[in-house]
Amino acid sequence: MLIRNPRGWELPDSAATPEAVVLGRRTALGLGGGLITAGLARPALAQDGALAAMRNTRYRPEREVTPEPASTTYNNYYEFGPGKSVASTAQRLPQRPWTLKLEGMVEKPQELDLDALLKRVSLEERVLRHRCVEAWAMTVPWTGFPMSALLEIAAPTASAKYVVLETVADRSAMPGLRQSWYPWPYIEGCTMAEAANELCFLAVGMYGKPVPPQNGGPVRALFPWKYGFKSGKAITRIRFTGERPVSFWEKLQPSEYGFWANVNPQVPHPRWSQASERLLGSNERVPTKIFNGYGEFVASLYQGMEGERLFL
Ligand SMILES: Nc1nc2c(c(=O)[nH]1)N[C@H]1C(S)=C(S)[C@@H](COP(=O)(O)O)O[C@H]1N2
Ligand SMILES: [Mo]
Image (cartoon, rainbow, N blue to C red):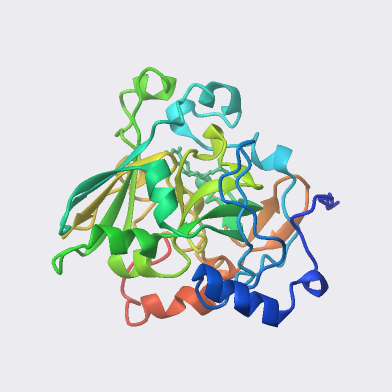
């Protein structure tokens, strides 16, 4: 049975702001094309800890939003241990002050304070599907900004071919780091073209509030067309390189986890099928879609790359 989410972030299309108003607001706020507001513009960082932004309805969830208690209590976050119940331990990770280092093949290597950065980018809300390689899925309203905004700030050089996103390795807060056989820190990476794709997102909010530590606060990456392990949490370093990085899971188990990791129902994981997925917060199973249903935005990135192991 599907548990309906009664909260207010799911606005029917009929409740959307009239286009004229939207256009006026869009110009006033300098927001990009495709952004249709479905609510009042609230300040991005309100004093009560709320974090709300206008919803970008270009990315249609086509599913019920997962109830917040489900998506915030069933997590993968190996820095806090291998189980799913890491939410209480993850509260130990300090969320502020937080710095993001931009380094490697960039014009100006820099260290950005997260709050200062958030004043330079425009925040928006996107309701996105997330598909874990373990065949469970959730649909979450995230607040954040596209990775392309950070690319502009970093100004990568022409020799930069890949982006590496690195999770903080805070030994005093993260007991999982004592498991020395894991190749810490957790890193993930993508090509420059993938990072520049409109779907590549950095989230600082979830359900209109700051992303809780267990879900990757204060800032996490989102690659909604790829398996969930590509979406690194608590990102503190972004490195531009000429060499394809070998990420955390690929180092551990290269026969099971690869660089591209694009969702594909037709390529089974070596140990299980990827044809369908279980929705968190319900026992419903639904068919998995190629690129997690985001092919219209990303399929062109992989044209002519049929020889690659695209989907592992
Ligand atoms: N740093 C870090 N990021 C991570 C992970 C992790 O273990 N450590 N797990 C990944 C996996 S496998 C998934 S499915 C998602 C889970 O995100 P969620 O807990 O917010 O659902 O985070 C990804 N990002
Ligand atoms: Mo995952």
